[in-house]
Length: 184
View 1 (cartoon, helix red, strand yellow):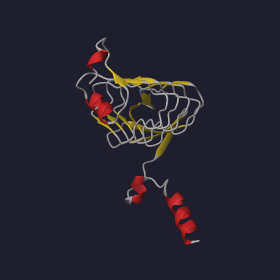
View 2 (cartoon, rainbow, N blue to C red):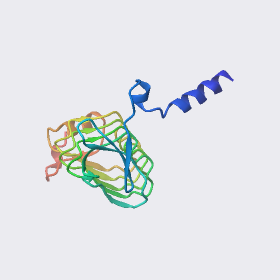
View 3 (cartoon, rainbow, N blue to C red):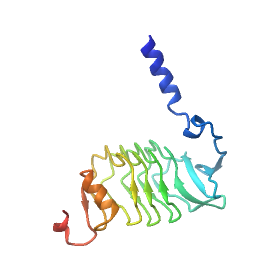
View 4 (cartoon, helix red, strand yellow):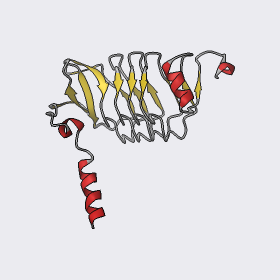
Protein backbone atom coordinates (compact mmCIF):
# COMPACT_ATOMS: atom_id res chain seq x y z
CA UNK A 1 0.00 0.00 0.00
CA UNK A 2 2.86 2.38 0.85
CA UNK A 3 4.48 1.67 -2.52
CA UNK A 4 1.24 2.37 -4.33
CA UNK A 5 0.76 5.65 -2.48
CA UNK A 6 4.37 6.65 -3.14
CA UNK A 7 3.98 5.83 -6.83
CA UNK A 8 0.72 7.77 -7.10
CA UNK A 9 2.17 10.76 -5.29
CA UNK A 10 5.24 10.76 -7.57
CA UNK A 11 3.02 10.42 -10.64
CA UNK A 12 0.82 13.31 -9.55
CA UNK A 13 3.76 15.58 -8.76
CA UNK A 14 5.74 14.69 -11.90
CA UNK A 15 4.11 17.29 -14.16
CA UNK A 16 4.53 20.10 -11.61
CA UNK A 17 6.43 22.80 -13.51
CA UNK A 18 9.95 23.43 -12.27
CA UNK A 19 9.23 27.08 -11.49
CA UNK A 20 6.35 26.11 -9.21
CA UNK A 21 8.54 23.54 -7.47
CA UNK A 22 11.09 26.29 -6.74
CA UNK A 23 8.40 28.60 -5.44
CA UNK A 24 8.58 30.87 -8.48
CA UNK A 25 5.48 32.24 -10.12
CA UNK A 26 4.55 30.46 -13.34
CA UNK A 27 4.42 32.83 -16.32
CA UNK A 28 1.08 33.66 -17.87
CA UNK A 29 0.22 31.46 -20.83
CA UNK A 30 -1.14 33.10 -23.98
CA UNK A 31 -2.80 31.48 -26.99
CA UNK A 32 -2.19 32.35 -30.62
CA UNK A 33 -3.80 29.99 -33.10
CA UNK A 34 -2.65 26.44 -32.32
CA UNK A 35 0.17 27.64 -30.05
CA UNK A 36 0.26 28.29 -26.34
CA UNK A 37 3.23 30.39 -25.31
CA UNK A 38 4.79 32.23 -22.41
CA UNK A 39 6.61 35.55 -22.54
CA UNK A 40 10.19 35.38 -21.36
CA UNK A 41 11.87 38.17 -19.39
CA UNK A 42 13.34 39.65 -22.57
CA UNK A 43 9.88 39.90 -24.20
CA UNK A 44 10.38 36.95 -26.53
CA UNK A 45 8.03 33.98 -26.74
CA UNK A 46 8.61 30.39 -25.72
CA UNK A 47 6.19 27.89 -27.23
CA UNK A 48 4.75 25.82 -24.40
CA UNK A 49 2.23 23.68 -26.25
CA UNK A 50 1.04 22.97 -29.77
CA UNK A 51 -2.61 21.92 -30.09
CA UNK A 52 -2.95 21.59 -33.86
CA UNK A 53 -3.23 18.44 -35.95
CA UNK A 54 -1.40 19.33 -39.18
CA UNK A 55 1.26 17.07 -40.64
CA UNK A 56 3.46 19.81 -42.17
CA UNK A 57 4.19 22.69 -39.81
CA UNK A 58 6.21 25.84 -40.22
CA UNK A 59 6.47 27.45 -36.82
CA UNK A 60 5.96 31.21 -37.09
CA UNK A 61 8.84 33.52 -36.22
CA UNK A 62 6.52 35.67 -34.08
CA UNK A 63 3.43 35.10 -31.97
CA UNK A 64 1.33 38.19 -31.38
CA UNK A 65 4.35 40.33 -32.30
CA UNK A 66 6.78 38.54 -29.96
CA UNK A 67 9.76 36.76 -31.56
CA UNK A 68 9.68 33.00 -30.95
CA UNK A 69 13.09 32.17 -29.46
CA UNK A 70 12.54 28.81 -27.81
CA UNK A 71 10.57 25.62 -27.98
CA UNK A 72 9.72 24.81 -24.38
CA UNK A 73 9.56 21.70 -22.25
CA UNK A 74 7.29 19.08 -23.88
CA UNK A 75 5.85 21.70 -26.26
CA UNK A 76 5.21 19.18 -29.04
CA UNK A 77 5.25 16.07 -26.86
CA UNK A 78 3.57 13.12 -28.58
CA UNK A 79 2.17 15.18 -31.48
CA UNK A 80 1.68 12.09 -33.59
CA UNK A 81 0.28 13.89 -36.65
CA UNK A 82 3.44 15.95 -37.25
CA UNK A 83 5.58 14.69 -40.13
CA UNK A 84 7.60 17.76 -41.16
CA UNK A 85 8.57 20.75 -39.03
CA UNK A 86 10.45 23.90 -39.97
CA UNK A 87 11.74 26.08 -37.15
CA UNK A 88 12.13 29.83 -37.73
CA UNK A 89 15.53 31.56 -37.68
CA UNK A 90 14.52 33.27 -34.43
CA UNK A 91 14.69 30.03 -32.39
CA UNK A 92 17.85 29.63 -30.29
CA UNK A 93 16.84 26.79 -27.96
CA UNK A 94 14.94 23.52 -28.16
CA UNK A 95 13.91 22.48 -24.67
CA UNK A 96 13.88 19.17 -22.84
CA UNK A 97 11.43 16.64 -24.33
CA UNK A 98 10.32 19.31 -26.85
CA UNK A 99 9.53 16.83 -29.66
CA UNK A 100 9.62 13.65 -27.56
CA UNK A 101 7.49 10.80 -28.95
CA UNK A 102 6.52 12.58 -32.18
CA UNK A 103 6.37 9.14 -33.78
CA UNK A 104 5.43 10.34 -37.31
CA UNK A 105 8.12 13.03 -37.51
CA UNK A 106 10.27 12.32 -40.58
CA UNK A 107 12.00 15.67 -41.01
CA UNK A 108 12.83 18.78 -39.03
CA UNK A 109 14.68 21.84 -40.28
CA UNK A 110 16.86 23.25 -37.52
CA UNK A 111 18.12 26.76 -38.36
CA UNK A 112 21.63 28.13 -37.80
CA UNK A 113 20.31 30.17 -34.89
CA UNK A 114 19.79 27.15 -32.60
CA UNK A 115 22.51 26.87 -29.94
CA UNK A 116 20.98 24.38 -27.48
CA UNK A 117 19.03 21.14 -27.76
CA UNK A 118 17.67 19.79 -24.48
CA UNK A 119 17.55 16.39 -22.83
CA UNK A 120 15.42 13.83 -24.70
CA UNK A 121 14.39 16.57 -27.17
CA UNK A 122 13.80 14.12 -30.03
CA UNK A 123 13.68 10.89 -28.06
CA UNK A 124 11.15 8.42 -29.40
CA UNK A 125 10.86 10.06 -32.83
CA UNK A 126 10.77 6.62 -34.43
CA UNK A 127 10.21 7.84 -38.01
CA UNK A 128 13.06 10.37 -38.03
CA UNK A 129 15.64 9.07 -40.51
CA UNK A 130 18.01 12.00 -40.99
CA UNK A 131 18.60 15.56 -39.90
CA UNK A 132 21.21 18.29 -40.03
CA UNK A 133 22.66 19.91 -36.93
CA UNK A 134 24.09 23.37 -37.68
CA UNK A 135 27.46 24.63 -36.42
CA UNK A 136 25.61 26.98 -34.07
CA UNK A 137 24.65 24.06 -31.80
CA UNK A 138 26.99 24.15 -28.80
CA UNK A 139 24.93 22.13 -26.33
CA UNK A 140 23.01 18.87 -26.74
CA UNK A 141 21.36 17.24 -23.75
CA UNK A 142 21.30 13.70 -22.49
CA UNK A 143 19.70 11.15 -24.82
CA UNK A 144 18.47 13.87 -27.17
CA UNK A 145 18.04 11.26 -29.94
CA UNK A 146 17.45 8.07 -27.96
CA UNK A 147 14.78 5.77 -29.32
CA UNK A 148 15.07 7.21 -32.84
CA UNK A 149 15.12 3.70 -34.25
CA UNK A 150 15.18 4.75 -37.93
CA UNK A 151 17.82 7.45 -37.56
CA UNK A 152 20.33 6.70 -40.34
CA UNK A 153 22.42 9.83 -40.33
CA UNK A 154 22.95 13.21 -38.73
CA UNK A 155 24.74 15.68 -40.98
CA UNK A 156 27.31 17.70 -39.02
CA UNK A 157 30.31 19.89 -39.86
CA UNK A 158 33.81 18.60 -39.21
CA UNK A 159 35.13 19.69 -35.85
CA UNK A 160 31.76 20.93 -34.65
CA UNK A 161 30.27 20.33 -31.22
CA UNK A 162 27.53 18.27 -32.92
CA UNK A 163 30.14 16.02 -34.58
CA UNK A 164 31.79 15.42 -31.22
CA UNK A 165 28.42 14.69 -29.61
CA UNK A 166 27.60 12.14 -32.32
CA UNK A 167 30.98 10.42 -31.88
CA UNK A 168 30.67 10.28 -28.09
CA UNK A 169 27.10 8.97 -28.23
CA UNK A 170 27.61 6.47 -31.07
CA UNK A 171 25.13 8.24 -33.33
CA UNK A 172 25.33 7.80 -37.12
CA UNK A 173 26.76 10.95 -38.65
CA UNK A 174 28.16 12.24 -41.87
CA UNK A 175 29.70 15.42 -43.20
CA UNK A 176 28.06 17.63 -45.83
CA UNK A 177 30.78 16.89 -48.38
CA UNK A 178 31.84 13.79 -50.28
CA UNK A 179 34.71 12.90 -47.95
CA UNK A 180 32.68 10.49 -45.80
CA UNK A 181 35.68 8.17 -45.50
CA UNK A 182 37.10 10.78 -43.08
CA UNK A 183 34.34 10.11 -40.52
CA UNK A 184 36.67 9.15 -37.67
